[in-house]
Amino acid sequence: MTRRSNKRITDDSWADDAWVDDDKKVEPTVSRRDRRNARRSKARSRTVKPRVRKRSDVPMPSLKLRSHSQRRSKTKLPLDLTSKKILFPGLAVVAVAIVALAVWMIPTPSSEPSMDGPFARESIIFDLPAVSGNLGESGYLKLVNRQHRLAVLPERSDMQDVSSVPVAHEDIALHASAYFALAQLFDSAQIAGAGPFHVISGFRDYTHQSSLYDQGQGSDFLLPAGHSEHHTGLAIDIVPTQQMQGGYSLSEQLDGTSECEQWLVDNSWRYGLILRYPEGKSDITGIAFEPWHFRYVGNPHAYYMWSKDLTLEEYLHKLQEQEGISIEFNNRRYRIVHDAAIDGILHLPSNSEFTLSSDNRDGYVITVWE
Image (cartoon, rainbow, N blue to C red; front, side, top):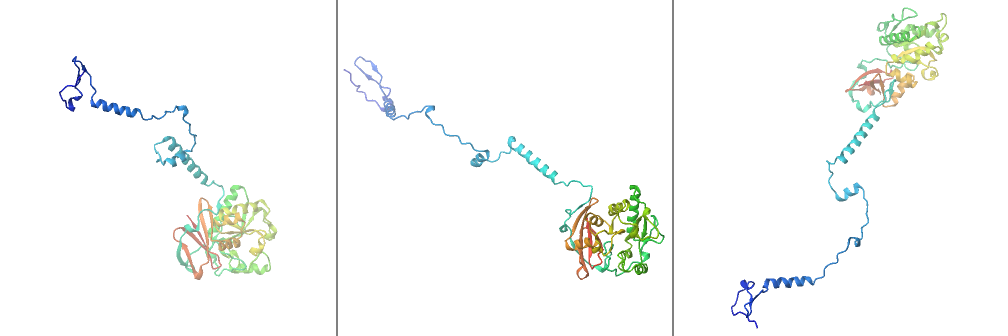
């Protein structure tokens, strides 16, 4: 029979003491710490462990595909500018689109001048008021006809003698600008193999015009003195040399159907000249068809009238009705504007070069260019 030792031990040495029997055999004892841990282990062993499912038991969720933009908007991740796979191809597409747009917007070159170009009135600043009577102006677009008389007639001394081109008689003179254009036209005709041509008439003073009108009073080809374009020195009567016949009137010699006459109509605009009294427009001009009568108006006006089949009357009316027209001619952009000169005051552009011409109707034509 075993007995407990009379010696009392403390808690600190309890785990190292043992029970001693009569045979002095030492039996291992269980320390309080071990018993406490054993109880805890037993308590944990009684809890229910969750059942572990196999991988095959777990149902697979259905896959829902989303676009890249949806995933990015949901996660709200910042754009990775270092991602070459996305950034560089995107920039390349944008660059190609910009280049394509720029090429599409470049106008196609044309061999002929174009009308209604981009030179808008808004780009011209008309802020220089001027008294119309004190301005120097060319007068190239003055309208002289049965309804509109010249208030002041030019003098013969204001004109230049015509000597470098064939003339029907010696006493023919023209305005200097008209003479220069005529010489260029004749040179071009010689190069093209057209013509030759002769000048029949140019400047006429009041006496000369009055005499012609009295001789042919009631004629569809004559206007009274003061109403003839020949007073300006800008009107020229041109006849193909081979069609000149002595003793016949110009209307009997020419009908506008010969190759030489047609060449004049098709090429005179290049030098600022127009056929002043075309066929089928006598109700507008007040004069019957005159295939020999040309008038200097300058460019780009001559080109515009020729291309649009307009008489000077129609051209001035169009300018007056519209805010202006834009023309691209000889690599230069023009804007032509009509000013009524209210109370004798008109406004000129301050930021562009321009020329000025009275229309002989109390208005002015302002030609602006860049």
